[in-house]
Image (cartoon, one colour):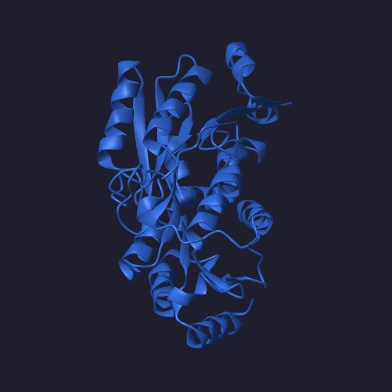
Length: 324
């Protein structure tokens, strides 16, 4: 849907009848705003809208989707969120911490359905059970899982004395990084920290990780990293650096090891259901934030062979999926 068409449709709907009356009218058109850096045709969004259709919310029929809310740059989020607030859409879908911050600054009224790395830790909600404000969604347990991934990386690299961490300055808190440093130090391993905030900083940070003599790399959880994973995967492969990633999809796309929930599954199975609940009238404050319940370990032995890295047999046996 073109931008002008979307705005015209929203304006016409608002003028035709007050929002309070829409829930009782069978002809209602639900209006979904979006603040995402990932493209509209990303697999997680495709799965999300397919499931919404199954739930009775069909784009082009009773659902108007903000196509311009996808593929946004970081510097476009604030302005786009403000525009959605002016249009008074029914729900704003936000992917990642920066998107949630932009949406929350734009409105305290419109429900925000978000997928973030640490919903409570970043202060987006008061608690998982009772979000309290206008934001709910899915939290990825980033802090806990980043530590687990570090443990798996060290298991994959027995004898390592230094590893590197790639962190998103907009997501990773100093306390979280200190916990990772302390955990590594307890095992006699030095942790080299490399922080980035923009896409153009990724390659230099990875180069620095390699030149620091790190035996491996832990890429911390971040929507920004997920949406720039091709840059990361290609650079890491060129450097021949063994790396650990935040979800199974990374390993399936060429990374060495991925551990965590599947992003596609979270959008399809959880967020689609949450959105349907919000559109049917439940307040965001009354809809608990959910957490992943399924975690997968995927090891890519083709990548291991390409970079000359042996993976301990015990770790391979524990993997949910091995790519050979």
